[in-house]
Length: 372
Image (cartoon, rainbow, N blue to C red):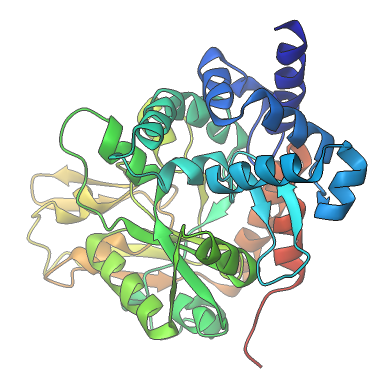
């Protein structure tokens, strides 16, 4: 048992420094999740392989594990989403996965609560989710920039600010259930939100891997745009990096937004747009207040709605939900937009300076699958 604990300790030391994870999450709840997700053999193999991984032949030499036994362990880990297996390859590379993008949280999100093992995984993440948000995500500061809903974009928005135009550049997209929302639906007491569940996306190699392993389904550009349009109607926030991973977040479940429910800072910086109210047509119905994911809108008086521009992230959820068209999105000045983009880049660099980017994510940044 002592040797097993040392192996798990080494694995956890690595997991709590992977992308967006911090040492503060090494709690009993996280350890319970890790012990459940990895057998001692799998934990030892993950430590031996290291984040850069290797082909099967490489791993036979590196681990000195007999071929059939190694194959058995690898395939078990691939099935549980603790190991990445390079898609479309006769000699695939294997890499241990971290906490997210993709990793343990997606493994829970892809779970089926009707299957006992996966139901237990969802329950363990349900216990750990608030800790992960509080001790890791909220401690990283604001490092995500939301995309403004396309149906709310002003006419002077540029193509690079239009998520629909950016999505059209990629030739392989896969959609899968939102891990945050799936955990919420199966674990949280009370009625879960009615936001769209199948709305998270991978691109390129990661997308092919997710489809090959049965975690996601391949979708066309047109299907992708239809999902994004439906998410806009629901008030879900477009976020992420096309070519890597993309989400449609909601304040009910999203780990990037739920921090504010704990009195912490959410993950979103301001983008190039902000919302303004047209008082003459506003009926003060309060829909925009309910749809704002960061609490930036409130009643100043019983008939006057105000928007706190220091907190507005420019997602456009308020504008897409206003039946009277009383809220519109306005593009910031070029100088202000440039400043915010620089700040977002600086904040993101701070995140990756405190964590370790998975080689798979680095590869995705360097080799985006783009239509020419």
